[in-house]
Image (cartoon, rainbow, N blue to C red; front, side, top):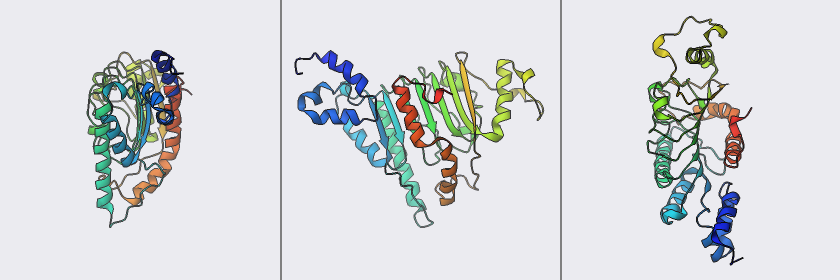
Length: 296
């Protein structure tokens, strides 16, 4: 086994390490030789859940030589790995908000380390935040899925750095249709767009989309015409759009009281439409060449 060329091992491990990171961790425990020979691909695919795992993973990667920390497939979840959701009260709401801020900081820390190599990124949020994703360059990113409660303010939607390589974008449980006029500049190479939005926005989205693809004659317009300035703009490269109406997002006065217990309980019902387990299964399928959420 020790005489096997490293190029062969790289090829083998590039296929074997397409899971949540378990295979890579196991290879490191087999022997020193196996740990060394698997180092270029050991961190190829990682699932990271919760604050502690984000910080721990970031520290390990930061101490790893750049050639051995090429994370290509990353599944990030703000949920605690044991599945226990916080139960905030009026006494600890501020502590919970602080905890959520720490999670966002840890996410920035981790993403900054893998930014140059990550290609498939799934991010699962369990709380609202001011931006949909930390603003940073991800030059190799080809597929992005964002799931969870989005900012209520429509002016904050799709505030990203440009992703020149992004081809597939999935926005799950977004509380509004994707009307941002900057989509073509954010993802100039986008070929697939999947949106899960409030059912009340479904017809409006279809009408706006019809203006782009000249299907107005096929849409039953029951709410009047659409203002020209609200026309949806999409990249010329776009080939496929999937739209799934989701349950209504709850509306609470003062949207920044995002840690209210009532909000968390209500969101549990909404999140059941596309659970974290299904998201992880889609991610695993995608990084192994399957359709994932892009199939019917």
